[in-house]
Image (cartoon, rainbow, N blue to C red):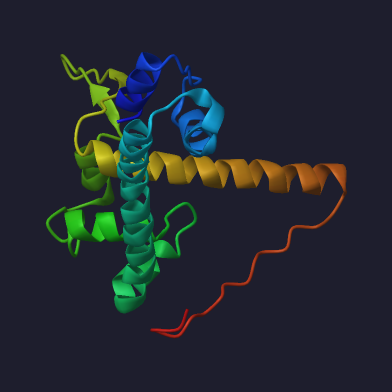
Length: 182
């Protein structure tokens, strides 16, 4: 959609910088500027296209809000969301994919199913571990990796405070929320 708008604007000799953020910022200005030579019918077309460009953002925001509320209705989702690096989106995705987890006999099987364990090439009783296999559920693996990255980032910042400011670590106290309370 952004490329279509950018191309159509180019037909009128109007150049918009590359990038969705640039288009979102410049398009309202172009629609209001009288000196750019856009005919009224073209202005209406670009206003309609701007609405189509913005509409998915609003839907995504709406669904993000619904996903944030989902774990509050499930005790299991709340427990999963309490793990550092796992938020409401990852918790609900894990619960939907793994169910009660009893179809796996061990935690390692879950990690292998997600593609988070080293690939093995064993021969003659000698195990040889290769790189991470990256097989399995790409979406869940991505959510878990991004969550872990966020926790590692936070931990790095905590370590810096402990070292640079010579402060003692204070474990954060969990915030207990009643079901249905926001």
